[in-house]
Length: 313
Image (cartoon, rainbow, N blue to C red; front, side, top):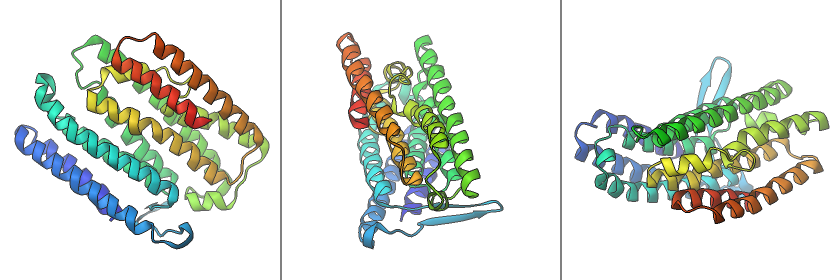
């Protein structure tokens, strides 16, 4: 069911793109794919709750010459997948009305396919059990969200916000490439189960992994001081995309931190100190910056920073 869910969302994105010149058909296809794909995902989550002791079996596996790619659900993945699907479904339903009322978006041929692509990539990120698949889905998520942010690119401020987001999200991706390269070299595998089996790392290596994790996952989450894209991208994006970024995209950064801690099995105490300090700075700083805002989307962006700080604590 998990593979079916992601496949339906991806297929819906392709068909919505092919029928983009007929807005009514594209809207019907995208909404049907979103609803059916999310329902299939809910079914996969319900099925996973019956596994004993949190055990899980791969829901989909693909073999490559040098890697074995798989997606599956454990307790952590199931929780975040439920969040992803619920928020994406609600944002998609609202977004369809929003698109119809916007002269610019109603003429766009890419807004619906990109939304489905973003939903599918978010689901794949939280279900990936291999670093290659995780990074591929992460990059797909970054590109889909970038093109959604700049969908109204006739505005210079939107273009500026979009390219700032592009630079930040790819800095994060580069950090994650290095992080998983270090883990893969130590474990001699890129499968998450294999990496976890040979952990924990030494203290020096753990410090490097924390730095890379703070850049890679912290920037996506919007933790201060890596939040610089958030207050720019939120006002630039369409309302339903902005809601998706606040509700899900930045939370994927938190998922990444939790998954990294799961992979390492145990982490030094200084990890807790760093995360607590980052949480305090983000929580307090987010509130202070929010008090000075008059733009609603920018205000919500800073409150998102505040909420991420509270989660980090």
